[in-house]
Image (cartoon, rainbow, N blue to C red; front, side, top):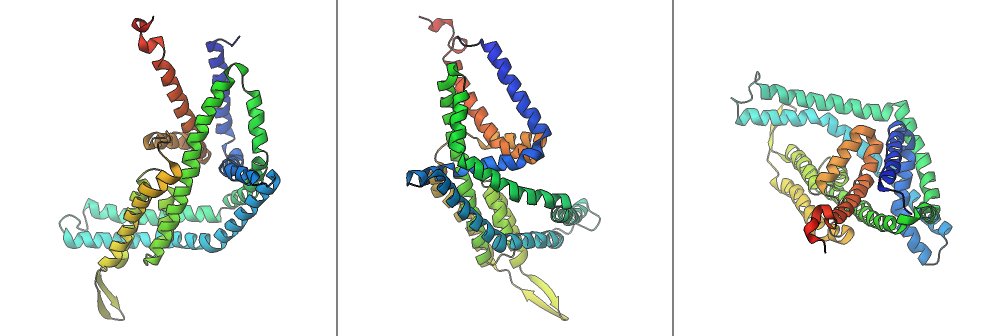
Length: 367
């Protein structure tokens, strides 16, 4: 005989509270294990396919690990130094961007932005704040001994955790299945399949979309001649998991930088005044890159890699990221998507039962 609903709710409530408390106090400690688990979850289907092709589980995981190590080394050697360099240059260039903006506004709207106006002072303050705060943030991340130690720990622990979790993934899922309450095992399995489908569609599919679009934006912008093409592509790809936000943020940043770089004006070099014309073609190419990216995302990448609705509305996802990020920091943001998927699936399951129950249908529907 199953336990009463009140007792079940009490037990599951206790489990939830304990998990939140652990997340609250051990957030930084469990970060490598959360990242390792996420990596193992993403690569498990590849390991399963290699097993189906005739490889053992150990051989499959070893192959995946070797390929990942090679790609990571190439990333460290080829991409990350340029990314850090462009980020530093962008932070240093930010005041010049605002100086150019302020000069343009002064020329076109002199009565609006005179030297004593609020707009003039705010533009100056924003430029100085971005340079100072951005520099402080970058220096803090790169020069902090604790931050460097944490990065080293992550680089060592995360791959080890991911390797062993991926190696024993099927055994762990079988063990968890064996521990499920027997009275509700089929219901839990059904909900788990729905949660896995949602996460697989979103994390694996959308993660691939982010990687493809980020690479496309970075390469295309650098070919177009944009000075900070790599960092703009990285930012755009990073936030592509929120529909339209990646293209909007990256597009505004890229077009703004293109206007700064290719906009005409006068420049004094060695005592001579040189007039530069506006390169509208380059500016149009930068804008066209993001329009093409949006077309590829909406019509090819997302339908093929993510599929239809995955049950995670952008507003709900933003809310989950904001709440868990503010409560539990970076670890909270990592677990926000899985938690949002679980809550979404449980909510839909509850709504289905509610619509089939007497509270919704009323007494008039009783036979």
